[in-house]
Image 1 (cartoon, protein in one colour):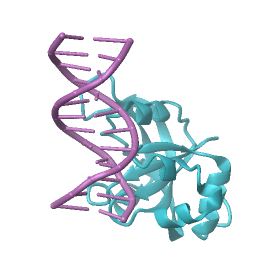
Image 2: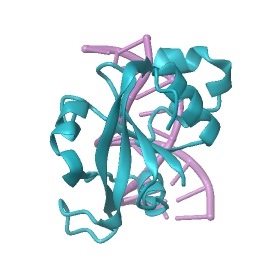
Image 3: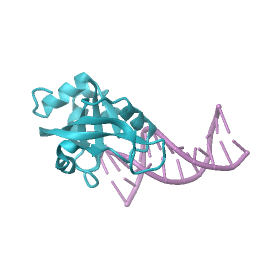
Image 4: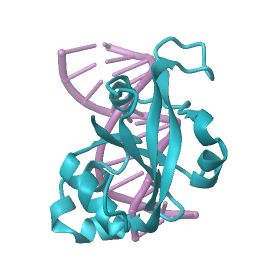
Length: 140
DNA sequence: GCCAACGTTGGC
DNA sequence: GCCAACGTTGGC
């Protein structure tokens, strides 16, 4: 089981949009960056991820689960790009902001803090627990 | 709206 | 294969 972080501009695709898809989930299409794509190729069904709002909010707002491994991105004919599908699991009780993450020395190496531009990132188990706790979720 | 950081492209 | 030019992302 691995942990990840998915970034989205809420203008384009928000947590509420994701929640609206329910169990069916949503294809995480539109990724045109090799590092982000490679991360998606490593994902397995059942892996968990944070749903992060970039630009507006700049905060982790919810938890998602990978529900389909990486497959061709339906929004392009370019065979280089593929993507997973994710479904909403639950919101954080309290969003965890980028500022919060920067303020916690234990999260200093988090990709979110270090490489602000990567849109699909790995999260370590420790980071996962710390952010969940900060978000008011005892476990997951 | 600006700009730093980073990725990609293309000329050589 | 290097690197300058350019485009994009995302925090501020």
